[in-house]
Image 1: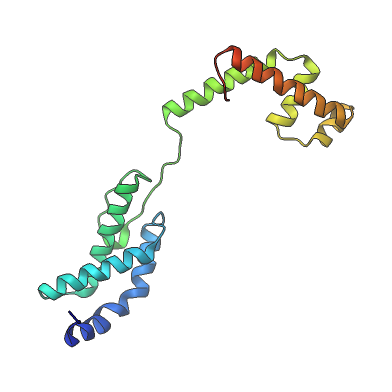
Image 2 (image 1 turned 90 degrees about the vertical axis):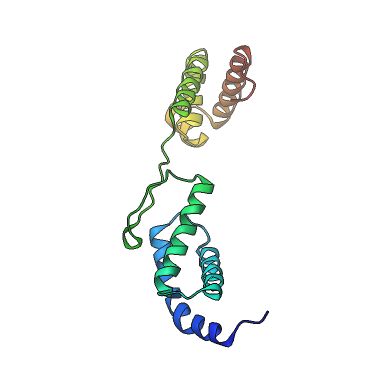
Length: 177
């Protein structure tokens, strides 16, 4: 069914002028929403359908409320952040808590302890080279210069140290670390 000329005129005059402000509002109030355009288009569709059935007192208020609700629904579905109820459309902020949970912290701590025990079993020079390169992230050239050895020695010690650490993990029931 083609749109009624009256409804098309109403949409063009009463709804579309709010497009830039609606997009700016959504980007500011809901920064985690990846596709603001989708939220806006769905808001237009819902407003259009509602207006086809009954009159709308304020297109702007209705449009912003629908867009806000859609953005909140998106957050609930994605579980990207804890839901923080917001009071008004003008004063909403979404906070994303990216801190690790207790289980993840424990796992990290356990992995760190296990790695520390594996490194402790390496010969001193090998441990120092593996630590500087693999843990501290220094390039092999810098490790060699710092310790006064050749780059080939560094490469060999890294290979030996990594192989021994992997063997240690396997002995302790860990196939992939």
